[in-house]
Length: 386
Image 1 (cartoon, helix red, strand yellow):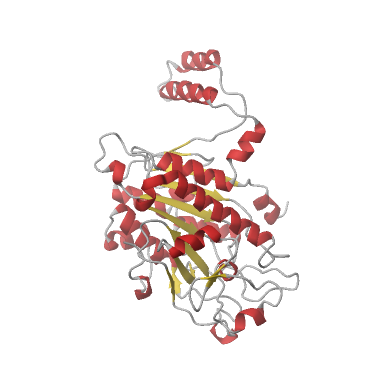
Image 2 (cartoon, one colour):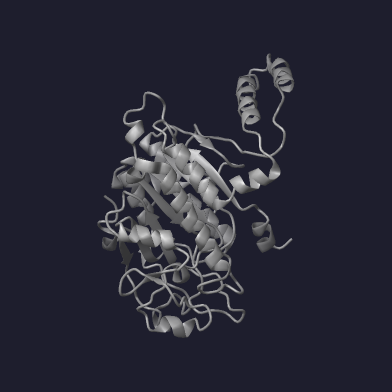
């Protein structure tokens, strides 16, 4: 099996929660909420947020350049699939960091996805993720991850656990009781009997068939579920939606319509559903996208794009300082591109996530730099969050 086939067969999306406050946690009900969306496959920042003010854009992408973008400012537009995000722009609740990326240029999905979750410049050098480390440093209690296995980005908080919904028949009380009896004298296993019994009871109340399960796991519906859970006073402070494939557009990428546009529409619906479900808590919430790398600036011979380096990062919510495209833009002339082919990461995306951690978890910049995620600060990010 080829690696790309394995990636596409890994499932559509998964939702994880972490940082579920205890009943006595100070300010738990009003603490900021953070939803992180992993866009695996390498999201094309030049399609999501096209540089409409760059004269080279249309020429270098004769087939797949976005034609009818939603205007942001004189330099950048928004893909027409992102209509709700465009409404947020008008409400001063959308920010884009462009020409950004991690300190990784190997263009490998597996390595890049390890870097985007671990926050380390070299792949496979950490068993923990930058989000998990941030919660540990901030002493945010662990929560429940609805995925198997625990996503790397959340690892580092030892109190987190995993949970995964499925369409299979739930465990019967008889079987649960039998397990409890079997494990009663086993010091290692016996504590799990009560957990399994309680979880089986919960599953029996909300059992679903295969079709309902598939619908519930769609990206927009996961956004709604995340909002429903995270808007509760004692709900999780952190949500993670892992969009496991869809942005690896080597062929027939499309422009205003097509494969990439379809995936962006799902992201737009995800944010819309999350905002609606959050209600008043949206004012104290933040949605942040993460992807392993961008795509090549020029389209290839099959009207797609190949693995690149720089891309864009989208942030939405009530914690946005003001609607703005934050960029250290060098242009799309070949002389300004990374290795003559890729959008250069002129702003370290790790610095963006450092800003998020500082605001959401109230961790000091020094602690973030030393204990969470090393990064290169950039003056262009001033005012990103309030």
